[in-house]
Length: 629
Image (cartoon, rainbow, N blue to C red):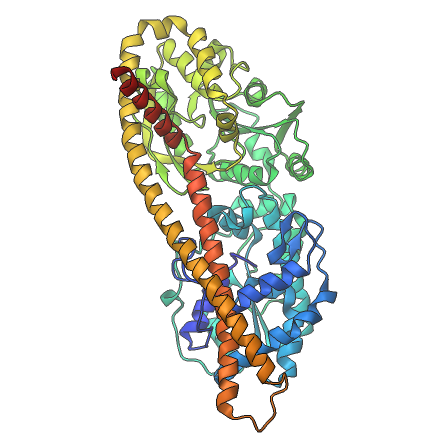
């Protein structure tokens, strides 16, 4: 499965002097040590699996679509090309192999080809916990997981069913290895390679090839596995079957016993109530609840509000959480403000922490916030830094509290701990604010004299998604009417601080202008890279046309079945030409993918608030110059 430790295992084999290919997929930010994937196999698998799937939602080049139909009757048409690739790789006379997770859905296809060639074919099949695979896919933005987080578990199940089936039929030639267990006992893995596969290999330390920041594992007692076990029971059952069959099992490294949601529904006094509104974000909700389980001290409460979800997967998750004992309240869809209000009406805590369903709370924040609020009665709100995940990966540090800056624009996320009376005296979150309702609540608190305290620590993880509510609100032009509404509601406060607020806005505009200049320089560099890639792409197209013409000429001169009397030098020329042509095709595909990634990055950059403000600043500057003229 993708993101399941295949790069780790492949780098280990490469260190053992196994030939993993001459043209490997280049390293990138998602895997700076490289993927160890043979470009020829990757490109071939993409074409095969796209041919064997229908045009429907999913990831056709992974062999998975929502219907999970894979037309294997089309595979024979690809045998000759696959055999030719094997012939080229085997010609070196060395122990060789390849890595591409997509091989998983083509194991029988390749096994028939490899064994028909008379060589020994062995398979190393790593598997990883589904929740870690899903997290890794979301962190790297793999395969559109930011739009469809529910796909990760379905694809994991689809792939690993086939892994287990193939292993059961060919266990004598396979190693089924829990990637998490490999990290615990690398010596056992090395021993299995020698004893079961019969390969003579030198001693290599796994620490030489492992990047601990990339392959992150959770402790066995982590609550996420237990919550996934009730929310995705099929995954848990399949994982248990893999563990039972594996040569190197992950058994004991995860806990599949049902969680006790009652722990977060205490009968006695409650210090902090965590309120999570949810609307069609079931797969993210699982991670949010697990983060509360990790982070909530004693005398904490969790209230989940289903704001009229309709997505079937979300409804399954909500029902599973309810059966596990968590407090889940359902209502007709009324929007984020009303969903939070509903949860707070049911909550009993002295202090409140709103947590969005797609975000994750970090340990330590609640204890620190409660300590501040108990020690300093004048402080009403405690907030801190956040760490972005998904579309970006950065630490964001908001400024120390400044009322004038807050009146100009919000810089405190909704995920802050505050006193319940702030919500009560403000009349709750205002449903008249369709977005940034937390901003209006902070203004109400400041208006009543409450102090704000920033903690110098990362307090939660904020998921950056291309279809988040704030992104959609920006696109739909909601910001301006929200500002006007807030200004009118707090007219006296704004009027009394107009001059100082305007100065704060001017300072922010200057800072944004500097950001815009930096963004412009970055965009220019990106455009240069795109132009270079485009030039290389068109050059490859021209070379491809020349190669096609040369191949056509050679095909007319040399019969398809080359007679034995043809000199070896001609055979080599022909094989070299074909190999070079296929390599150029793969390189062209790689460049095209790289070009698309650059375009996506540029589009994402141009969609940011800073870039739009830069355009606004440019228009304002032009207007000023026009008036001066």
